[in-house]
Image (cartoon, rainbow, N blue to C red; front, side, top):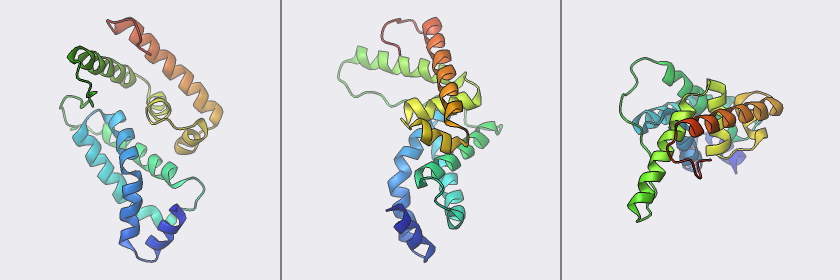
Length: 180
């Protein structure tokens, strides 16, 4: 389906690009939000990602999947944006569980905050690998394609990132049961 949409786009169909956006919007937004923890920043970065993808799509050569290519653009755009000084200073947006039990909702929100705090403490590559593997649920091969590193390097980065997050949670999260 991606090949047909890209071919249609290259023939001048704006509708084809909108279909590509509909296909991948949610997944890309989730990855970006996991990196930024700010809804407004994530939306801005997603918009920048689509602009970059629109301009670069004629050079896409199918050496990876379209999602992998788009995810690489999104992550690079997010990393660049996170390095800029005047980022928004709002508190992180966390999607709360809609369960009716307020205590469970509070504990889930709190654990998400601690996990995101732990992730934010990781070195940049480990942060990206952790998000792609454990939050976006990509395979090692997909992550290797997205990041342009070997599968072995991805596995090593995942191991180190998970270990650091686990250690952080054990040292900082007040409830010691069911944290990872």
